Length: 107
Ligand SMILES: N[C@@H](CCC(=O)N[C@@H](CS)C(=O)NCC(=O)O)C(=O)O
Ligand code: FES
Image (cartoon, rainbow, N blue to C red; front, side, top):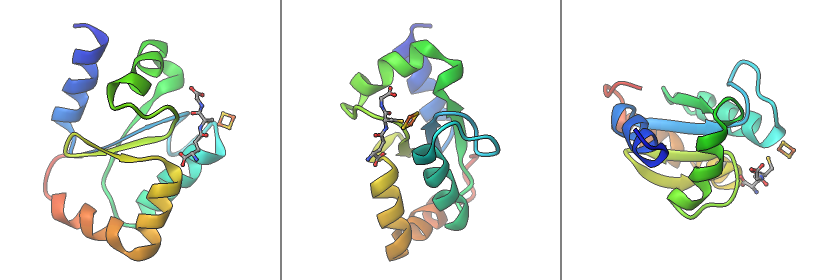
């Protein structure tokens, strides 16, 4: 499977995917830490991909949905954005609504 197929497969398998540096338990960057924290506070069940452990995905993902940085949040295969957008959506309550909409799907 090439790297774009691997990205597609993880997005098909999990309703909410956060590509981040490190893991939610051990984030390796403040932006990734804040993104994972906001998702957790919004009650989202999400699948995290540590791009530092997968250099191929780290190199390919910025081109995949044309977003240059990490973290990157996808919901049902669609790019939502990075840390700033995730925190804005959390603050407005929209993130919790989006998470509730996909709840029940495998995270
Ligand atoms: N304002 C961005 C901050 C994210 C950011 O600047 N990330 C940088 C530093 S972690 C990045 O991913 N750089 C490219 C790279 O490290 O591959 C957001 O909202 O997500
Ligand atoms: S790893 Fe340095 S700012 Fe994210």
